Length: 242
Image 1 (cartoon, rainbow, N blue to C red):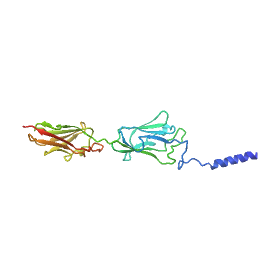
Image 2 (image 1 turned 90 degrees about the vertical axis):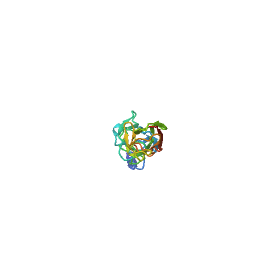
Image 3 (image 1 turned 135 degrees about the horizontal axis):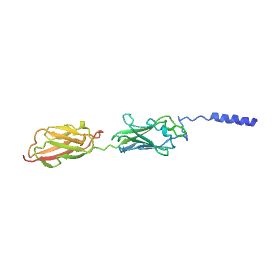
Image 4 (image 1 turned 30 degrees about the vertical axis):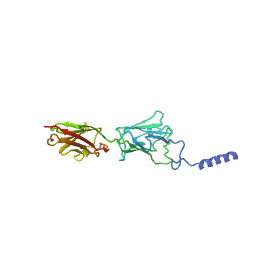
């Protein structure tokens, strides 16, 4: 009986000496952890239509996957709206943004310890209570000019009333001004149609017959996301006799 009593006391002492798991400063091998993130941390030139996915080391409880436990944030700190799904095996969470992400912008994937596995064990983030954060940048594609009317080296009548420039994507109309869209030696009214992606220069007064004219579009003209064209466009045409 004495031997048994000593064994019980020894067992109690051993149990008392084992500290409970704390997420701070150590890892719990049984806790779920982030295995991979797509796009990867630091990735650049990511397509605007990308889908964000986070794979865990063990299956997670689907009820703990919410817009608060896994979120995508823009540079302004606001969360990006999207649909969250979890794979059948419970290992991979995916976030599909409602709209394509903005070109040239940086986004952050944040995962919190609200994520738990099926046993209720919270996510272990490097043994700490901090957020898991991974960032990536969206590809910035400069806009281009698709067509100019009149075309380069065209010959047109002096009664031409307007110049039209069509772009490859939606543009920022505030950047299409008399300083960035010009017709040599002529004044005009500038407008932009978002439906046709076309800027128009309505010419004030008739053109001079048998004369060369130059259309200029500055490289500082930007798309709706603020990405500049980068290269200026110069188109030359000639007027006929009256």
